[in-house]
Image 1 (cartoon, rainbow, N blue to C red):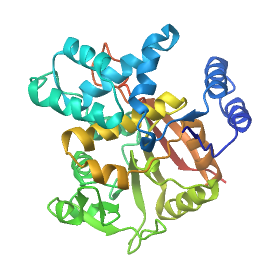
Image 2 (cartoon, rainbow, N blue to C red):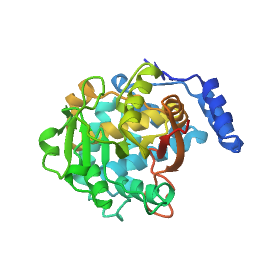
Image 3 (cartoon, helix red, strand yellow):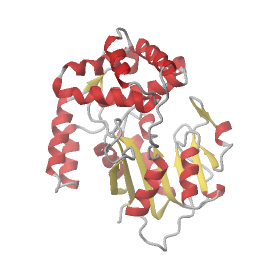
Image 4 (cartoon, rainbow, N blue to C red):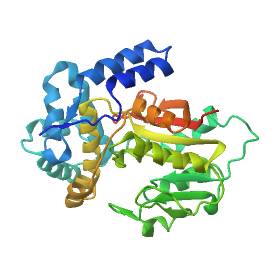
Length: 335
């Protein structure tokens, strides 16, 4: 059974937003219009048909890039050599997604670890983009950073250290537990931990925040209504310093295959590496937003976009990682 991609905004509204906010980029407009009108549904993780959906693109020449991205995501995630063996494995597997994950787990155990060059970290990427394109004033003092949906707190700790912040200035906010991320692990790091309630409200904040980051967090919110995203973003607007920024690293999902590939990436991590198979199917939820939808949400929430760049793999011959992540930076819109 295919699930319709529940767009927060109609395709016409998204195209009108692009025309209004990016009038000098007609090529981008045409590309998004064509793709958005072509794709509208994808099989959810519970159909057990995500691998076979992507694999079917192998036999369609115009969609070959999707299959290449699948290969890249597998190797990027489980970090194994033997590309030829992986290709052979994928083309011979017959079965549902659970069969693919089981075979890929066996492949991971039997093949050698890849010692490829170190990829650029998300914290590095955010830091250098903010310093190069946003915080150009040498007199602007960064004294407080908050990471919402912090996971284990590692990325916030790395980013805060780059800015020379101490534990009291690096604030991590998240729900108490999600998969194997919990407060026990977070409390081992040099960060200040704040809880998030069921409505996404962050409490006990003292003073305004200079930098607020959401690193691959929003696609797990899964709200049904635009207003739910707007209300949450307005609460972030309230705690942000007037000269501060919100930096959001997210997936630019436009097609049904984009969504499949991202679910598979999450599935590889939980089903192949960590072996949280039951937890994955019982717990995992996702609702991916393309950058147009994110801009529209932020616009309604009182923000304006000031910088965007795709997250690359840190190597000059690879312009982006296969899951198409982008960094969008916003500030409070001038009245």
